[in-house]
Length: 108
Image (cartoon, rainbow, N blue to C red; front, side, top):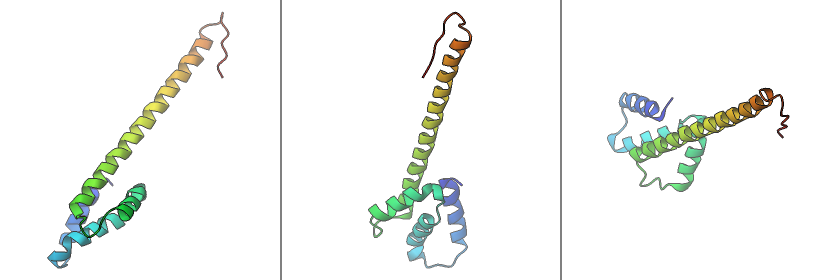
């Protein structure tokens, strides 16, 4: 579930509850942070240890979570690109050995 999906689900489910409106932002913020899935464990720990919960709003937490999620996606894309590049380089080295029978090349 993406951050946007979780944000929407929480908002819709919260609207069904009969909580006092003055507590809405704080309650939604706390539920949002507490129920994030395991891929956001580092985010949750960081928010809990670094943020001032007196002033931190639900909207701010959602924004920070979206930024964290974007970072995870970027990190994943970079890793996939590096693996793809390494695999391609390996294939080129292997291909040069196969297709160059007059030249013996050993790659370590």
